[in-house]
Image 1 (cartoon, one colour):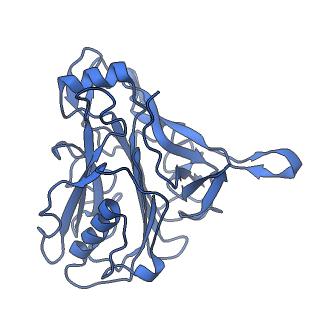
Image 2 (spheres, rainbow, N blue to C red; image 1 turned 90 degrees about the vertical axis):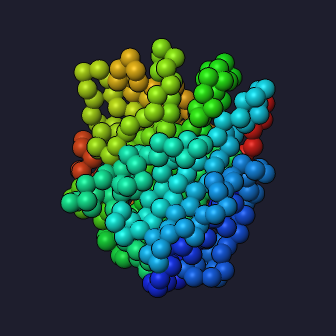
Length: 368
């Protein structure tokens, strides 16, 4: 299911709370909130929604616990192969928070809302937390700085992109993808049996501040951010560990250490993805599956490689806009455009805007 929420620029008290109601109604109920801060006439829900009970409120008392200029909400998400084996019921979740100190952010959590990340709830979109610098800070209070929010809500994948107001050179684009790793019965059922907080899911966050729609231009200084995060994992010795990843700029794909690479996605965020020429002079857009690469930095690091279900890279470049559609046969894929810059030697270099693609309709689990 694809969702677009168009902001009406609401700038009064409790905008944050009403915004959380809009997120809640869209994700849990698959519908558009009819009041501020949403322009319902320019918002939409398209495609088949997730299976029943995949997304549920963490607590029915949220939203509404914040003040006049802050609020929070969260959902619990079932793993797409939930119930595939006896007593195999893993879940993950996402925690939304909006205030003036760290702006709007969404963090992946374990099913008890523990170990939020990257970093913590007291950090910016991608996990940077030094308030002396606003690296990756998405907005401030109210909704007058938000132009659009786009979401994918499916059994395997939750994705969200927030686009701020401004020009093509001045906007910020913040993207978060929470995706289930492809189910491996022998690994995942054993791991879950040892700890009910285990879930084979991963998230990645990106923030692009400045020139998101202009290729061969760099973002504003230190406003190009990228992180990969997993709340809990099992190391090669069988010990359950909580991740501690923060926004250090090392997961975009260009930095390694003597003991290995930092956790990242593959193709690496830095890698370019182009279109291809096919018959009759036509151009086609590739759909390239994204894989989780845990990095294996040490003996106590995560070892669980795997494909991120129904999450794809496709043709880079500023010609796409978020919400566009490409097709493969009869399957429609929704575009998340201008997610981060690719192609440079370093994360701060000039580059081309990366594009993600997701099935518009839900893709439920089918047993092999």
